[in-house]
Image 1 (tube, rainbow, N blue to C red):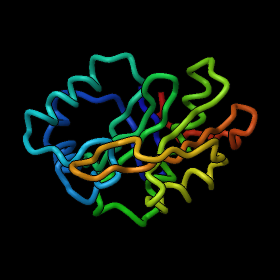
Image 2: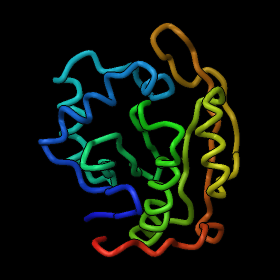
Image 3: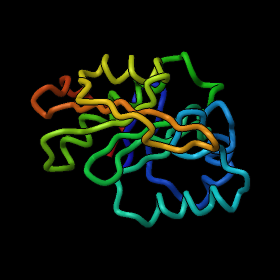
Image 4: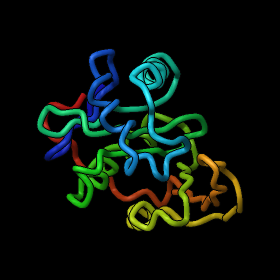
Length: 174
């Protein structure tokens, strides 16, 4: 399956994505608000990639100009997750990916809502989710030990009935 936007291709992961995905997952800034610190080895990324390929999740590699720049998708219970390499921040690419991904998730799954978890210090991610209609459901303190620091979590949800109208995918989406 492929989701195609004006500048991006979202496609299923394959073994050849290791180097591109490792460039994202080993970058300290990219991983600052992820559930784990940056990957220390290619083997760690290989394990992550293997899970993307073999697990029953709805996860996509994000490509820009033929280069792997991140991933976006949903894991159990339609929990949304996305990450881009910092070289691609601030260009509207995460929003462009979600424009294709969110309607796909609702079309592919019989779920009342999509959820997301965010570190409350990650203002750009919170702004992005809010722009797509996600609303805060609750907050919790000290939910994740990231290295030696306890982090809080803010929880969001997007109800199916509040989903923005689907953007018509460009030719080539399958």
